[in-house]
Length: 408
Image (tube, rainbow, N blue to C red; front, side, top):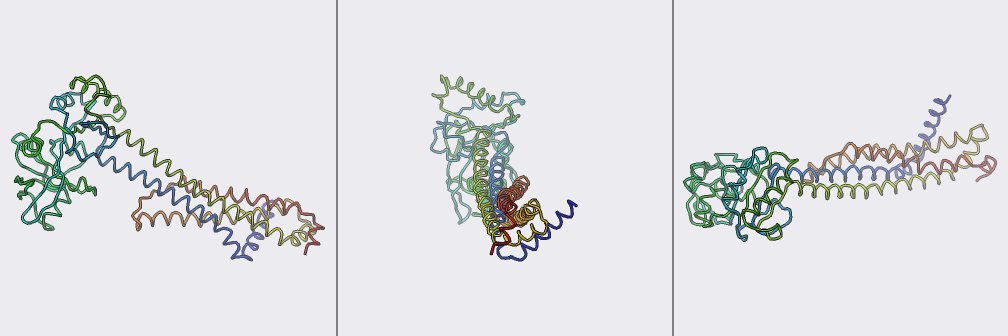
C-alpha cells in the first residue's frame, strides 16, 4: 500500500510539473546553475592547485636552495643573481658534498648573468648559467638532444654550452643540428653540446648552461657561488637538514646567527605548503560563492511551491473531501519539490562537468573534477528540495478541507 501511494504521488507530481513546463524549468534553473557552478569552480580551484604543485615539482624534488644575500621570501626561482654579491664558497660546497647520502642526494652550485648570444647573423639575449654536472638531476631538467657538458669540459674550463629551447629557436633554422656549432656569448666562442628540454618557462627556456669553471673564467671572474641547489634524500627531514646546513654555514662564515647571515635557504616544502594553503582557501571560497546560488535556487523552489499551493487550494480541498489524508498532501507537494531539485541537480552535474572539461580543453584553464564536489553539490540540491519544499508542503497539508473547497 505504501509503495502504491508513493507511486501515485510521483505520477501526480510529474503531471503537475509537466502541466507548467516553463515555470517548472525556471524553478529548477536556479538549482542547475548552483550545482554546475559548484562543480566547475571547485574543479578550477583543484586544477590550479595541481598546476602549482606540478610547477614546483618541475623545479626539482626535495629541493633546498642555499642563496647568497639577504632573505627574499621563499622563492625557488630567483634567477637574477647578477645583482647579488656572491658569498658562497668552495668550502661551503665541499661541506655539502661531505654530508651523508642519507641526508643529501646531490648538490649543484649555480651562478648566472645575462648575456648576448650570437650565431651567424642572428642574435638574442639569454641567461648564462654556470653550474656542474649535477644540475640536471637536482633541478629535474635534462637535455632533450645532444648532451650536457662533460667532466672534462668542467675540469679544463672549456667553452661548452647547452642551450635552452627558446635560444635554439631564436638562433637556428628549424631542424638544424646545433651540436658542434659555434655560438658567441658576450663575444666569446662556445661549442654547443646539446639542447635542454622545453619547460614552457621563459627563465628556463632562454638559459644557456656552461661549466662553472668556464663561467668563473669568462663571465664572473670570481670563484664564489651565487647559490647552491641541494636535493635532500628524504622530504621528512628537510627542515632538520635546513637547520643543520644553516648552523654549519654560519660557522664557516664566522657569523653569530641568522640575523647577521650573508645567505639564506629556501625550502621547497615551505613554499609548497604556503601555496597549497592559498589555493585550498581559494577553492573553498569559490565553492562557497557557488553554493550561494544553490540557496537562491532553493528559495525559488519554495516561492513557486507556495504559489502552487495557493493556485491548487480547491484541488487540495477536493482530494481531502475524497479521503486524502494530510500526509498524502504533504507527500505530493514534497515529492514535487524534490523532483524539481533532483532534476535540476542532475542537469547541473552534466553542465558542471562539461564546463570544467571545456575550460580545460578549449579555455586553457587547468581543471580537475572532484567526485566529492559532485556528490556534495547533488546532495545539497536534494537537501534544498527537502528543506525549501517542506514548508509549502506542510502549509498545503494543513489546509481546512471546507475552506479549501470554498476557495475561488
